[in-house]
Each structure stands twice: as structure tokens, then as C-alpha cells.
Image (cartoon, rainbow, N blue to C red; front, side, top):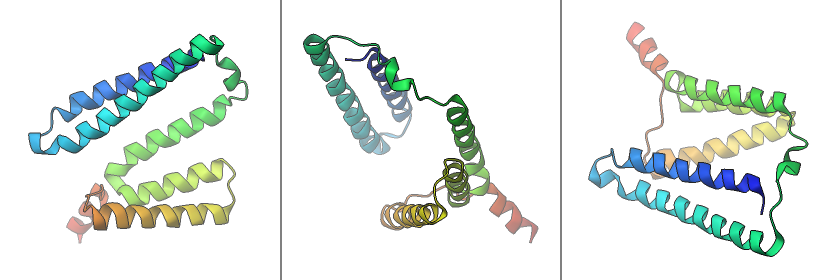
Length: 153
């Protein structure tokens, strides 16, 4: 077992608690699916914790910090800022344009080949469009800017 895994489990239980709190704010009819997903996440986290304990008994405890020896802070923080910008832009320009900009910028930053970027974007956008927009009829953020532009015309 790695000591760093303890932190991961604690964070995941915190995420579960936060989502449970948020789910209980929804109308009763809308709570079923999020509660099931949250229960699944909590259950998987518990299974991971059980495996950690079994591993600690069998093999002992290691620090886990050796996994971070190749950690690049500049890369991490640049991508973190990109994620924050993505989440901040999405309500204003919409899901699809914000996702396109985020994917392109982050994959270019990570030096992914252009043809792989295009292939990934096409595949993910088709998947999201058909699965969420058409099949599940989920309303994705459309962007306030488009409503403002329509009002000007």
C-alpha cells in the first residue's frame, strides 16, 4: 500500500459527500440517477480502501512519492489553468466551442500530433452529440454570447 493512496481515498469520499449534498438539493424525481452514480463511486472507493488495507497487511506500507519523481510542475499548473479557463468560458461561449478550444490548446501544449488531435476531437464530439444531445436529450451549455448576438440582430 502507498501512503499517497490514503489521500486519494479521502478526496474521493469528500467528492462523494459533496455530490450527495448537492443531489439532495434536487427534486425527489431527479435524485435517483445521481444517487446511484454516487453510491457506485462510494462503493468503488470502499473497494479500493479494502484492497489498500489488504496490501498493507501483505506487503507493508510505502511512501508512494516515488511515483511523482517525473512530476513536471509547469506542465501540471499550465493544464490546471487551462481547465479553469475552460470551465469559466463554457457558460459564455457554449460547450462545443469551449471544448474545442480546450482540447486543441491542451493537446497542442502536450505536443500531440495534429492528425491525432483532429481524430480525437471528431470522435469525442460525435460521441457527445449522439449520446448526450440526441439519445439522452441532455441540454449542454449553449453559451450566453450566442443569445446576445441574436438580440443585437
